[in-house]
Length: 353
Ligand code: MRU
Image (cartoon, rainbow, N blue to C red):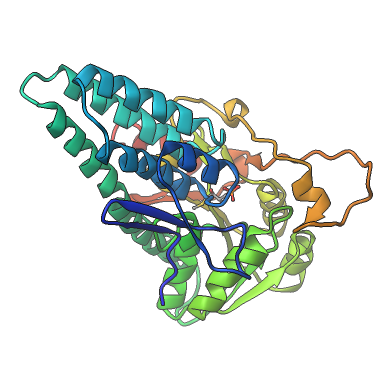
C-alpha cells in the first residue's frame, strides 16, 4: 500500500489527518476553501508543497460547483479566496507563489474576450490538477540530483549515513518527498546505510511522520531526539544532512522547521555537508535575505501538552516559533528539480523559474 496524504478523485478532495498519525489513519473531507483553510491552519495537512496543493485543490472543489455569473466576478472570487488561503500559515511560500500565479492567470483570462466563463473555469481546474503531477515529478528529480550530489565524494560501493529533520516525505508533498525523496533515491541505489531522523519537537513530525514513512517503506532509519545531533556527529561518521525548506530567500538563507539552524551549526563544526532539498516553488526571489521571512508562532499547548496530557509545569510561559532561518553561509547546496546550486548561485534560477 502506498501512503497518500492527498486524495483527489472525481472532483472530491480528502486529506490524511496528520494530527492522528501514526496511531489512527483517517481521511478528512475538504469541501471547499473554508475547510481548506482549517486543515492547513490546524496542521492536519502540513509541509510546504502539500499546503499549496491542498489550498489550491480546495478552491478547485468550489470552482467545479460554482454557479458562474460573469468573468470579472469569477476573477474577484478567485483572488479573494486564494488570498484567504495564503493567510492560513505565513512562513511556507509555496502557497503564496501558487496563488500569485493563479491570480495572474485569472487576470489574463478575464480580459481575453475569446474565452467564455466556463472555459475560464475549466482552464483553472486543469492548471490546479497539474500541480499534483508536477510536484511528484519535481520531487523525483530532486531525489536523483540530491543522491548523486551526496555520493559524489563517497568512494564507490561505500554506504552513506544521513541526518534529516522534520517530515519532508510523501506526507508533506503530493508524493515521493523532497529531502526524504533524496533519502529514498539513495536507498533505491542501495547506497543508504542509515538515515537518522530527529524527533522534531514540539509537533513531532520526525517521530510520528518520518519514522512512520521509513518503517512503511522499509528504509533503514533510526530515531534520535533533537538534542542528540552533536553527539551523533561526534560518534558516527555522517555523510550529509539533508532537510527541506519552507521558504528560501534570494541569497539562499532558508526558513525550515525549528531546529534546522542548530543542526546546520553542528554540521559545520563537524565538517558535514548540509543540504536543502526544495522545489523552485519554495524560492522567494522577492526577498533578498532571510531577515524578511515571516516566522509563524504556534500555540503554547503544542509544547505544554502531548495529546491531551500536560507535560510542562502549569503556569510556565512558552515561546513556540515553528521555523528558524539557516543562514546561507552554513548551506553547502540547495537541491532543486533542475540541479544543485550553491546559495550564491541560486539567483541564476530567477529568470528561468
Ligand atoms: O510545520 P510543518 O510541519 O508544516 O513544517 C514542515 C517543514 O518545515 C518541512 O521541512 C518543509 O515544509 C518542507 S516539506 C517538503
